[in-house]
Image 1 (cartoon, rainbow, N blue to C red):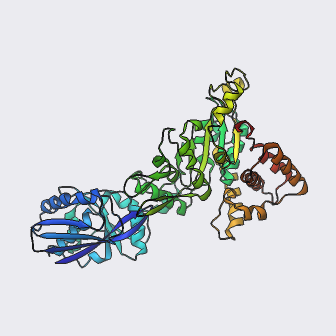
Image 2 (image 1 turned 90 degrees about the vertical axis):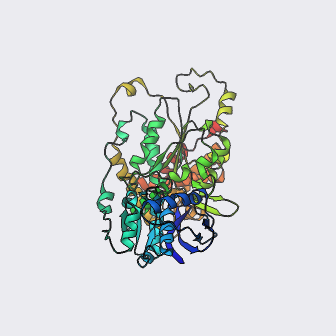
Image 3 (image 1 turned 30 degrees about the vertical axis):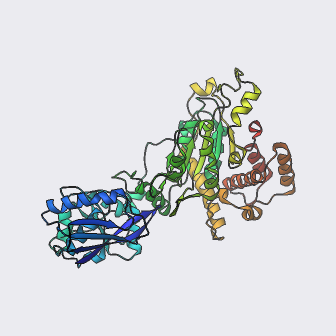
Length: 510
C-alpha cells in the first residue's frame, strides 16, 4: 500500500516542503529511505522501528520504501522522524490519513515514541503557511517558536501516539496560542548602557554616527582604554528591530538551534564577538553537508565585533570583503549554492602597536618600522571597507576616578532612530532595498551627497592629504551625509564634511 505525509527541509535560512512517500510491499523485510537523505535521516530507521512498537503499533515485516520528494533536494536533521512513522502506519492501514493532508509534520522520535524538539522550525512553519496548509503538528518544545507565525494552526503533541490519536479523530488538540505582539513590545532591562562609559567622548560620538548610518568602525587604542566596552554597547543605541527584521534574525538562530526555548523571537540586535582563532567556515559559514550560517550571518541586523584584529587569520579577514559590500554571503557546493543574509555593522579593535604602549605616555618600545609592520597585517582593500577610524586613548586619571557623565543609551537611540527614519524616507522611493547611508551606491551618492564649492575644495584637499581611494572618497561622503542627517540638515555642510574627513585618517596603516 502507498501513503504520504508532508514535512519540510531547510536550504539556507529558507525551507521547502517535502513530500514523504511510503510504499509497503511484499518481500524480504527491509526499510529503505531514498531522496538524498543524510546520515541523520538514514539513522531514523531504527528510531522509527522502536517508536512504532513502543507506541503499541506493529512495524510491518515487509519491504518498506520511503521516498523524500523532491529527490534532488538534500535532507538533513531528525525532523523527518514523525512524518516517516506516520506514513508507514498509514500505508499499513493502522492509521486513518484523511486529516493528514492538511498538516505538516515535524519532530524527532525517541525510542519510547515520545517526541523531541528539532531545529529550524520557524522557516518550515513559514513554508507551511505559504503553501496554504492548515497547520503544523510538532513537538511541544517547538510550539512557542512556530506560534510566532500568524494564520497557522500550531498543534503540539508529546508523542507519536498523540499524533495518531489526532489523525484518527480520537483526540482534539487545541491550537497553541501566543500573544507575540505583547511579547515583541517587551524590552530587556538592565543591559549595557552608554552612560556607564567614562570619558571617550570622541569615540562615543563616532559610534553614534556609525549607528545612525550603518557604518563600519575600526578602533585603535591601548589595552584598557575601553574599546570592548564601547563595542558591546553599540547595539543599545541602534534602532529597535522591526518585526520583519526580528523574523529574519530568528530564522538564522532557529536553524542553528540557538533560540532560547522561552524566547521564540529575537528582540535584541545580535552582538557576535568571535575569537581570533575562528576558521573560515566558522566566520562566513559552510561545513559538511548542507552549509550552515557563520558568525557574519548570526550578526545579521546587529554587530560583529572583531577584537585584536591583526591576530585574525588574514584569509578569514579577506573573506569579509564581499559580504561587507553585498550584505550577504553565497556558499557554493558542487550540487548547490546557499545564500545567507549578512547585513551587519562591523566593529573592529586593535592595539596601536605590538607592545601595546604607543600612546601619549611615550613609553612604546617599538620602532616606527615595527609599528608599520604590525598595522600592515590589515590589508588595504579590507581597510577600504571601514568607514570610520577612531583613536581610543588611555583614560586620564580624572576620567578614571570620576563618575561616568555620558548620556544614557536611550537618549542616543532616539537621535539615531530619527536619522534612520530620514534615510528610510529618502531611499524608500527608489525601491532598491537601500535603508541606510552605508548602503548607498555611486549613483545614490551623486544624487544625495552634493557639496558646495567650499565642500568640494575641502574634500579635494583631503584626497591629496590622505591619498584616498575611490572607495575611501565615497565613504567620506556617506559619513558626512549621516552627520547631516543626525542634525536634520537637508544638505551636507562643510562642518559635516570636516568631521567625516577626520574619521578617515589611515596614514599609519600605509
